[in-house]
Image (spheres, rainbow, N blue to C red):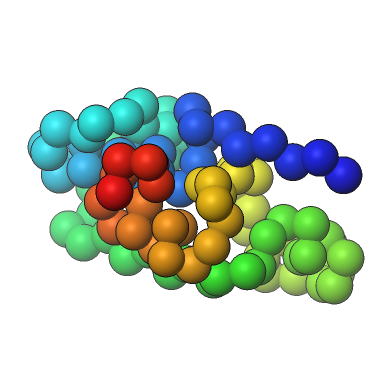
Length: 101
């Protein structure tokens, strides 16, 4: 299976939606569906829990369709490349793609 990163809809863009919500200037496009959730809920704080190595394909193979994660999934997105812990966590913390950090 060939998986390509989508830099219009990846971990970086989640960070950019959070930056936009808190009136910071994101360096990349935010995600409209995350922007809507933040706008509708108006949270004072935003917590992101990143499960390293738990991709949607793994979830599909190992847990039931009725599980908490599958029932509450909003959308599948890609990680960044390279798909390693240090690159992914730095991208979600900064809103920058790995080539930029």
